[in-house]
Length: 499
Image 1: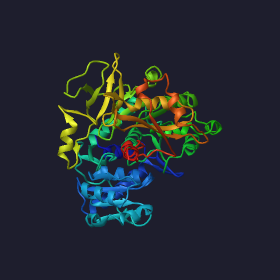
Image 2: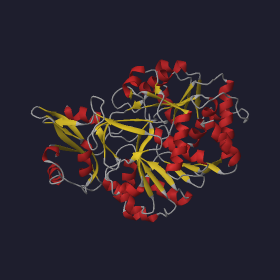
Image 3: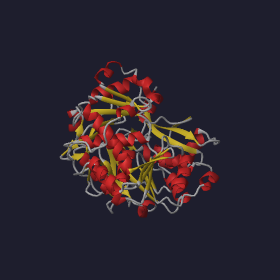
């Protein structure tokens, strides 16, 4: 049966005394992790929880998060991860919309739960890790009785909500277990590997890769929060072999002082995986420079679809700004506004289908209907395909701007600006222009100790892009606004600079 709870039960026998989880120097074997998961599962069953009930989780990365995932997946109780940066009204919306019965948090976030108002009334089990959680676990560690099947819902993940209220993404056990199995094969992850969980677990990608490693029988090192130098220290200490990080995290890693990066022994690293947004060429080159023996993969995906396209190390340098070819069992289609396939090389909206897709948007049939077409699904990305069958994400449909009747893709301009030696991060947006419709605005965060001017940034673009694509305006900020998964909030920037 393709359920995460089932594989963890098997691994508790197969890898009994092998270390499954490392967190803050403490370790849990597969047997220990399974027993704690069983105790929690039996405690919820004792309280009358049944398959399909929901439990919301709001906390930073920790070992408890892992045992909760193991536990609830065994009894079919749906996990509802909440961004730990969320505030009262946002938490209340997810609790109410998801119809959650249970809520698990840490002492750090008790204050925010106190602000959810009437949403608290539907919570019948409120657990705080440092307070009443361990007492709740005082049940036997026998395998819980369950009737979970692979088509049941594993978790209900809420999208980042960059354009409105977040949507609840319904993901089945089957979808995520197939993702884990194929991911392990694609990235050559097995029981000998040690994976660093550095991204927030409430987000889809870190969850996928920790599931992949535990399914394969390896070890995960859980980081409470991402600190670039701490990551390097843990690579040396634990012999970490692979990790997933968003481009911003790789950017911060490779912008550490040269002597800091070279201070640590990182020879154990085999695989780096990146996704969430485009990996800038400058960052990619820096990764290959500092970690020449690491296989670097970049994939395109979403909460709704897991991994959709992947570019392998052999193609990274010869296929610039490319996200590769379809992941195993995924079919892709690029269409125009009339839903007709575009010619090779032309830009259109990317649709795809495969076994990793969401079942639906929870309690939102209209959004579900809009996202699907003939079995294919889209999150609104513009893409093109080259003559070898490789795909390129041009930009999000909603981020494209039109100036003087010409389509301009911000990602293309950002790629050039990342080549400026003073630029740490950049976002390009369109702002209203009475003559041209929209003008190009670049918002730039500089590297520490660096200085440049708007005129120098614009001049840097000379000869690297057509004149109509060059930024007309350049603004400098300390840091760019981001959602919890690391994506730049361009809607926030557009609102700010339009005003």
